[in-house]
Image 1 (cartoon, one colour):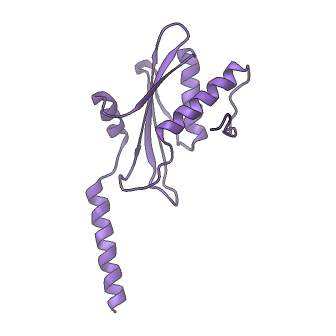
Image 2 (cartoon, rainbow, N blue to C red):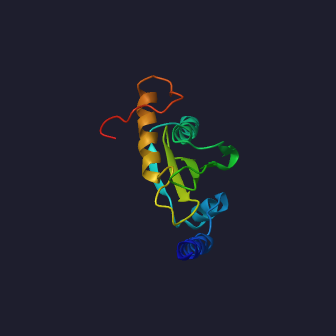
Image 3 (cartoon, helix red, strand yellow):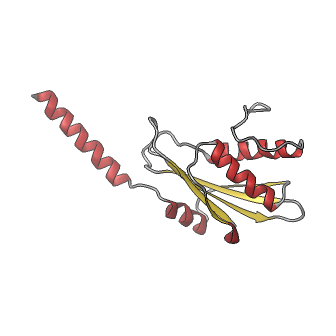
Length: 154
């Protein structure tokens, strides 16, 4: 009987921790971008159209669900579902022209539940994959549907 009551108490405590930590949503990603409090930014030697396709491809390579495109406003949002290790991730990418044949890309990723130790996609992984995709395009190849192996020490 004591085991059951201890498990019940532990389950209740875990439930309270999860409830108190809150769940991140796409709105939280939008707010983080609006207030400039989060995100990682890099500029790439690609056109805005190329950057748009690359960003969508990177999200797909890394297991995102459907990508919600807001092309006229220069951003896209997506998420990934729950796995054995995480409750999922919410993500957004903003693309801005940065001069001739250059585009600045800002990405924000948030764990759905802040107490998760694992996230589907980190901002640094997004940018590493984005840079990899730029190299693929620069070599004259099309972006593959399946994520390629890491290159150049990635």
